[in-house]
Image 1 (cartoon, rainbow, N blue to C red):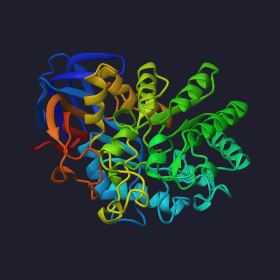
Image 2: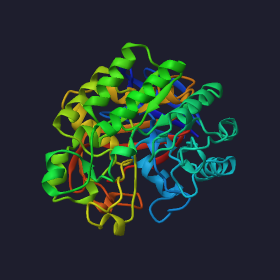
Image 3: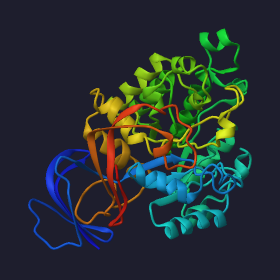
Image 4: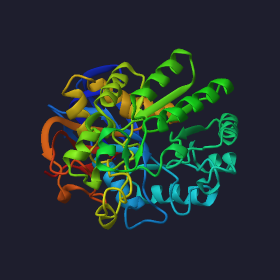
Length: 427
């Protein structure tokens, strides 16, 4: 199928240009002025912006094991509504993605669904228990580009060292969930005045930064690359900034809720469990540090940490409800509303944080940019169109989000995956 996008304003990480785009099947054929060619479909993108397909390094699809919360099909539908054409799914499933068969099944199901490339992240350790390493080479050959025990850190430093060494040998990437469980005290929110005032068990910010520091010292010692998930604290940002100055091969991500919400929002919501997330929401200082780090490039990319849950679980009291909320459908609008419209990032920053850097970090080729010869994964957006987050317009199985009833700016109009329109906004 041949699609011609006319009057497009292209956004790459280093330039914004008004050009036409001609694509056929899984390839961008032409990026030029005034393309005149017969196509199966022509899209007039006047007044809209065209980005490379977004890439999410941190998604929970709950399959296998909790298909009541999300499955590969519903997760794929949520992804394309959010403009994502590649998503990396975390291995904290039941059973964990710690074997070749399960990784192969996810990739085959992704191809069968045909909406988005779903990349399984292999578990670092068997059953994510932090003890015995999985077969990295076998999982890599099955299609796992990255490894993580997300939901838990690898607490044993020796096991983590071996993981980095094996990842280096197999040219894979370790994505670390940074949390020192020994000082978390089964906490439900960030430790501070508010947690003390309300008598809630809490997680100190050093639970994250202690592991960040440990892991970066090991990575520096071994001269290996490492990626740190969902960075949320000012302390962690400073450690990462210093490590980058020292040429440690570290990349990292944050999530929209860490530059939009703080622990004060938990209180203002009357401890609505939709605001419960791990790492927990920090204070204003953390939020400003995250925004500054995004602007300066200390934080390389933005991931969703899409974490759907059943309604019954999220109706539990705040202390007992599970961590996390859905995010695939909201990420672009939150970034546009709270970073672009406020001057923290420009539109090129979106292309960098949601497409170019994630592709580079994970080793995906021929994507992350709009270029002739690259994959025809594209997103057409209206950056000024407003919409309100409501349960009725969420396609994920789970509706749990702290942004319900919030008005946001920026709408995905089309998502094109491998030359096929897989999402078109009907509103």
